[in-house]
Amino acid sequence: MSIEISEKSIILRRFLMVAYGLSEADVDAFMKIVNSKEGKDVDAISSELGISKSRASLILKKLADAGLIEKQKSNGSKGGRPKYMYFVNKDDVVEKLVKRAEDVCKDLSSIIRGL
Image 1: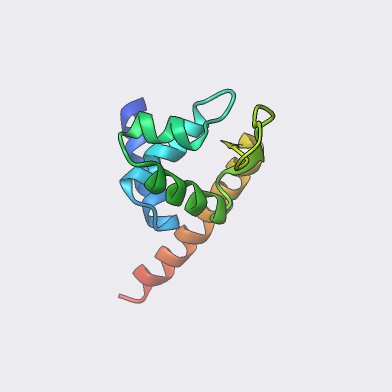
Image 2 (image 1 turned 90 degrees about the horizontal axis):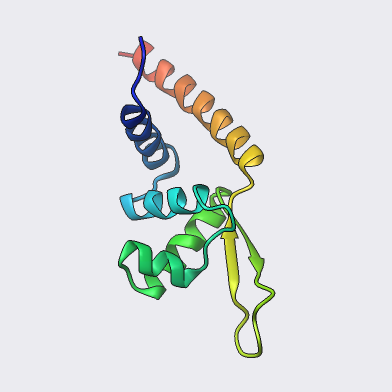
């Protein structure tokens, strides 16, 4: 059975929502960062998703707390509050997602057997 790219994307998005309790906006932000070569900052996520900077900050914190993204202080910061870039270490996140998928499948199998 071959799954088309759009179906794979939907399956991945649903998995992230279920396994990590993410909202659609959380998943959108994660996907923007995953597909970015240099990472994204709060301003970019806010602009690309059409949300406030405070909402973007909360989403990025949630993703970082879940271990899906990492943050690094931007070199371009000049005085004031430091600016952070958010990025994905793809090798690490793939391993985390695979492990989480295995755990979720085991839990689901137990639930189904208990019916």
